[in-house]
Image (cartoon, rainbow over all chains, first blue to last red; front, side, top):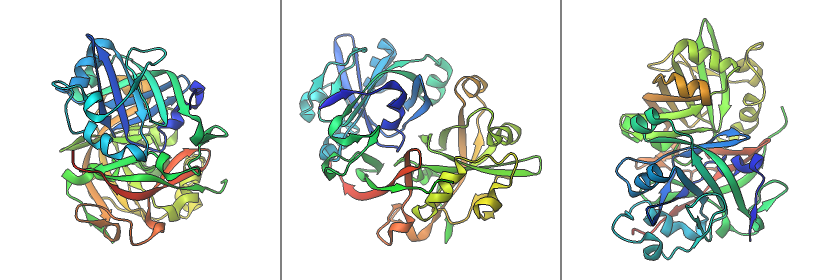
Length: 187
Length: 187
């Protein structure tokens, strides 16, 4: 079940570097694409950065709305994540084509992707120079959600099943699942 | 063995979101710290971004030199990566304290950390506004290296042993190893 996550913990959804789905909405259209190039950049209020390439339909919708979501898909969604990163939504409805269901977000118009295990609702902090030069967007996280079956004691816990593990894109459709949990010794 | 990696493939060292060690050198001092908040932002020439917090010794050395390296540590280095992200190098030699060995880089003064499985030599592309506002640095990768025992056919291959898998920090010393390799279906 999708449950609200405290904003001060929102960075944990991305801290281990999973590949995400970026959703966007503007002009009566919505879209979804995959993005591996995203990371937290601040704790509280939480901020993130993400590369959204010029020329993509998502870029058009984010430029128009100043909003997007970052959804953390699970291993069970492997094939559709790769497809979402390969096809363009400009000429077709990727939601329908990929069998994706959208749920309304709480504070942005861009929808949440059902079946993911984490969700961040984001508002762009305009930095026109770096957006133009590097396709790099900085945003504040204004709401966060997590799938409660994989979240325990304030962090990810994937012991319940491998299908819920996030995925990390290497290249060309090769991914790694989030692997074994390791506890470092206190220095 | 550390072997040169073609620059066009350099993004693959970070694409799956591992936690890194950032090294720096200036004013006759060197330092090493851990950074989970780093990602590729371009393919060729390869560029990366990384958060280097104000007030850290690494920030002082990177501001002075305009250079750093991003090294991808392996699971065998778990405890020292956590320690490198917790202690400060301002008042002690972290290399000695953590038992780390430095090897010379090829194009920057910041050294490479021995025992890692990937290395990126980086030169800062100055963006003073985002550096100041978000502690966010953008850099060009000018040389790249990979441990050849975990690299096959142009990408990571960890089948030889779990100790060489990169690690992904969640929070507070909890990490996940890079997990199972998954091949998505071609869309």
